[in-house]
Image (tube, rainbow over all chains, first blue to last red; front, side, top):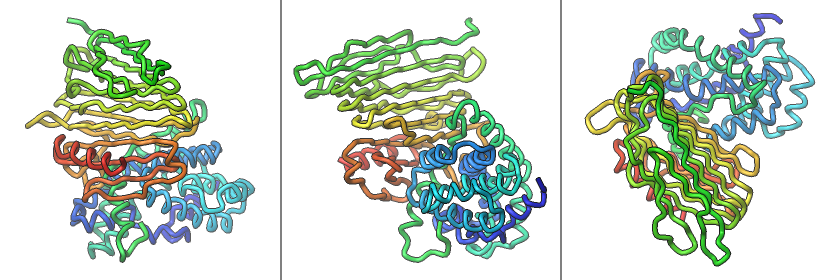
Length: 224
Length: 252
């Protein structure tokens, strides 16, 4: 494996469509729940330990080679909001296109055939990590980081927040990001023996509710 | 003083009685969990969970198992809110609920609120197994702290499997010591009550209700199968119940 592959996969410029999504930040800004760097940090922290942990564990499990069909079902059950399920599949499809072009691999081809409309993004990310020769912890890191970096970048645009402040938020979350990524990779290893129920299912009620509100808007800056 | 907590399991089994009603061949409370059969409504048998002691306390492990066999209609409620309290025993309390609903059977699981009192530590695990032709209405409400106090540590996981396939798996973790951000703008944003209403029925395979908002802090979300989940946060238990009752009415 090459560690640099992780930088390629985690790069915000990797053409997998993530920039079009705010991770719920747009809805939270509109509702007045994110107003500055401090509330962005609390938002990102909550997201990291809920949706972020779940995504990271799914990605790590896919990177370990667990059955992607079972993982996709686990992702569906952990995502009650249909708006978020649609967004996850759209992002999965875009990640698939980018990953197949970058790291051609028979497992990516097989996954694309199984889910022509896209599998949940973390599952595709995990298989992409595998194709790139990366391990479960790498996939977990990538997914956990993505779970907060998208929201932070989006908030810069939504609130005209100082980009230095947004980056400071991400830097302050780094120690927790380490813990979440490692917990996710541990859970994925347990799932090898115990099945996918061993993966976390941590939920964030306001992310689910906010996503449904957001999907009903006529005009929005971000897709989710 | 005991160092180990109380272990208790209560069991309910409901069967069709062959005369259009529902019989309860198993109705066994244990220790602090007593079960009462209350007046039936039509073909439905009604059971009330009665907490004979306060609890669960730290170190306790309570389990409730309810099975609705083919053709049975079972309604389970509780006489009062369940209050998780700190105990003398070390460690968290556990409350496990195992619900099984067969083809042609119906379960309404509608207990009163779970109140997570200050300094308590409780893990709730609710697992539901449904046959393809089963019907379920399940309500869960968590209240973070009694009036004027902070919440305890609460982890509550709800999973629903239908015809062997996972339909819903959600865990809420909140209170002091919970992973960060639980009270922040992504999760509860200062709300002190949170609840879910899960409805699963075979009719949804033909026609699924659409996603809908119920005000700013609740949503009806169709799941990736014939079921839906209502998720709501509210400032207190009374507001929460009002929203979930409204959702239940909307859904018929």
